[in-house]
Length: 279
Ligand SMILES: Nc1ncnc2c1ncn2[C@@H]1O[C@H](COP(=O)(O)OP(=O)(O)OP(=O)(O)O)[C@@H](O)[C@H]1O
Ligand SMILES: O=C(O)[C@H](O)[C@@H](O)[C@H](O)[C@H](O)CO
Image (cartoon, rainbow, N blue to C red; front, top):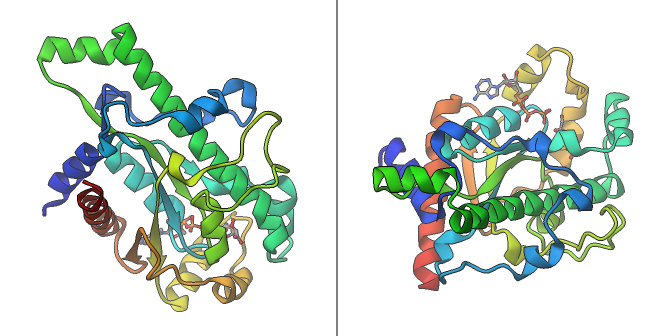
């Protein structure tokens, strides 16, 4: 399938009418706070269901994963643009202590990463919940999207969810990101419920490649807190996600445009297979 068609197919598979017109572009991630008071209530998050029984109305979380310097931010932005979804760089959610530690050349451990991963999952669920709220508002209140739809006679279709860049190096980290692990709540703002897997089906785009290319890319990159010397610990920590559910692998060595094509095609296939099983 051609890339444009794939994007359209994927957007339709996961469409909720009236979320946003293409001209609106991605939702600003800056506008979404971690503070519970700025966010939809958690009971809304966990109680919500596709309103007419279509599994196609579910939002999705796409996580671009791999070791430092593999191109997560670059591909994450590009895939988010292609799917017209908001993008969050997981690095922006690290506590300052983690950034400090990495800057000093010390790899993070499980304890450092756990609250960070929980925060990413929680934030992602909130972004998706906010989109649902906007959708309901537009549907019931005759917002901008609906008027465009009635003028043109077309229903604007938009995939829901978001794209996140996050190393996701271990299987158990990915379990947290999928919403499977019970949170002890320590990383969550007061009043915010722990994440739940059903709230946001999760897919991984794994950027896989050779150490040599990674070293080259990292050493050419200037001003990043993560130095090339950290690469070996990243590679040693990495547990390949290949074979896990909902994983698409793209080649590190490919140009971003080709990676996007492969990613969209892979996601489309997985989601179509999932929908055909559940129907
Ligand atoms: N497909 C690609 N082809 C060539 N260069 C690329 C590609 N993708 C990313 N790069 C370059 O590789 C470097 C690392 O990319 P990027 O910052 O996106 O990786 P990252 O995985 O997000 O890194 P980190 O996790 O360390 O922040 C950047 O200089 C970027 O421009
Ligand atoms: O799990 C980790 O060790 C971290 O997420 C790192 O991977 C960095 O945050 C990122 O890659 C920036 O270089």
